[in-house]
Image 1 (cartoon, one colour):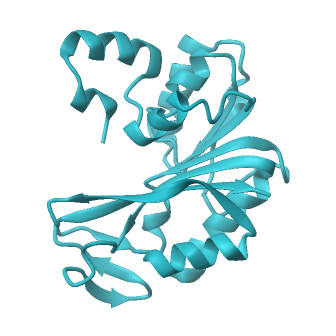
Image 2 (cartoon, rainbow, N blue to C red):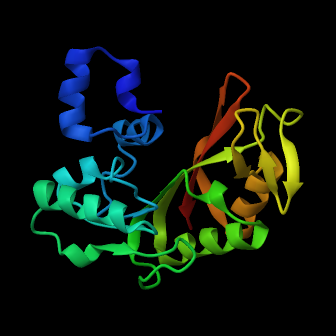
Length: 213
């Protein structure tokens, strides 16, 4: 949910200039100062760049990937406006499970509304492991993804971990047990409790925040 949905128009204009149309749960982490000491940031599945606006404006070394060429063009234009010193090659056409970056390179990796487009468990794990591979020890992983938490009896399985949600969309869904298991397997620590937003029993979006030990 965009931050601007929650506040007055005047405040929204001021905040949007500073933060763009940032996801409110990522904004929450910025307010808490979680990423103050981060320098290198990667947004996986960046879209038009709604979640990197703040980082571009505030001197971070920002990178982004998306599988949509039009999205990368938009992000390059945004970066040229907000952080023209950044190389254009920081923004690349790439898949989430095949990241073109070195191991342990980033202080913060963002994966917002990406992991639930997995084809199956293997694809989900490949995307997760790639994000973890490029994250440095001590770095932060911020993810927003669809889950069945709170709507377990309302989703319809169609195989390979994918479900039809009450809103009619099809997503790969995780549950509480899966999130706990993956956190343990990655030897990660949660830097924020797992939180889930239930949208009128139509879908559930979970915020999953881990730090690499």
